[in-house]
Length: 272
Image (cartoon, rainbow, N blue to C red; front, side, top):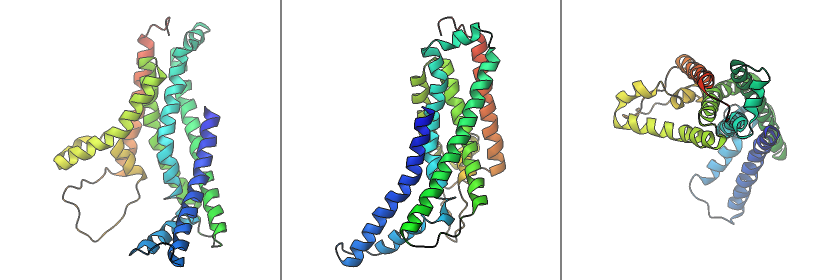
């Protein structure tokens, strides 16, 4: 699975750039040739889409693709990484040969964190390659890559992976099933932000509660601030401060790992 995931994110990182470039360029050519009727703002929108593919936009566009798809893939990986130990019966063998339960949880946690780091690094490199590739195809300048900004945004995205992976691993250990952990982890990932948004729309005071969850703190770390002169939406509730977000996500990660260790200590693994 690790090799498949790495190959997949490489294909996605480069493929998204090529697909968007080919699609946008084809529409621009069709509008300019009169093959397609021109709609107001259509040409400008396509040109803006092409500008998003430039190297100076990798930190916002390319890293965003890797982070968004990577979150789902790494939840699946974390659940499988722990859950399969029960399905294969290898956990009991490891413990019988002298591996401590704390050592098992720690090694799994560190290996998950290390793989997430490799995954993000490979994905970002693939996105940079894709950006340079389509820029070369378009015969445009390849200058402007801000490597420092790319690393900063990628590091923030990597940090948001950790609590979701720890949660998936905890569920896998608790349920002794990779499938259950994958399903529950993805449900939490996709529904928590939706529920938080609905609660805030119902009453903005709920922001004081949901701002201590996972999704809004993850968004606070990864979202690029945008200033606007328009009046704010009355239903809008500001995201948590990035410093607070980092602390909250760190606490959740430590809590999930601690619960995993506590559950494994109290569990009879003779049937695991």
